[in-house]
Image (cartoon, rainbow, N blue to C red):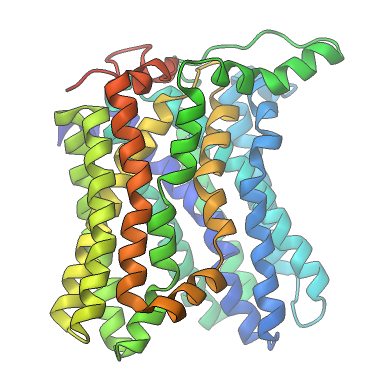
Length: 430
């Protein structure tokens, strides 16, 4: 337990809390608010466009790396941006709290996009601060603590909003949730500027500014194996994404009641995920980054096959509990070791820009694979064959990473975030 109690790991936990809640404010929470305001379903679903801001964050992440904030910047580049971005999130959420969807849906949509913009910027700063604060040997445990915080922040914000809204209205609910930006802001203020931060070359004229924009990407793609790393990032979640898109359809067609879904899917799955996060941190420390990532990819692939078994077996409470427990356990492990791997890929001079690129790339394929596409596949081949297909879809990512390990490309593409400081992410065991 000692690694989880180190100040850097605890900092990652509090950073995760603040990272998770802005997304929740424009996800299920806003959907519930709009529905209770009498907004039609087609308009409500259009609000998902606010999420796209998170995929565009590489476009301005370089600003967080290189632009110095006057006066506030004396506290340090990361600390000043954490305070500024956190304040922007609080202001954006209060703004969303004060608009009335029934009176102006356009104003509500604008407010939601502003929350997405501020939240994505906050994410950029939080990820950079987390990576630069953690030593290489702490990346696994720190990523796990960050995942714990993210889950608590997002679930806590959603629950707090519903409880407060039922008693005092939605405006009060959103204002109450805005305070969840404070854990990251206070953490940065107390710990100060990360010691591992590296300062990029100073910017003066237009040419230097342009170089600062493309510099993080040029540096990354000059590494041996960089293109294959990006290909892996794009491919590794395809099977899991497809499978989760139609999960609730599967459960409905198998005849599970809402109570059964709440107990086995949400209840068992939630605790299995938390256990998986803890185990992921242990595996990273005991097996090293490469072998723990490969193991997590295999486990997530097998979890897709377990849904094929559930679909073939039919309605079964024990079957659903085992399937959801295993899937969330595997996802918890993957969420730790894969995030740690992606963190280790960053150059400490361009942490914000490079991790923004990586995190955006991990979800872009999921945005392209729509529910309509997955639904059409289910209708044409049935659930059993569909989930066997998702298992096959996981194989390219597994095989690619295995081959990259054998060829030494995983090690050659690691950035200074994974090699500078105490420990080395490329080592086989911690």
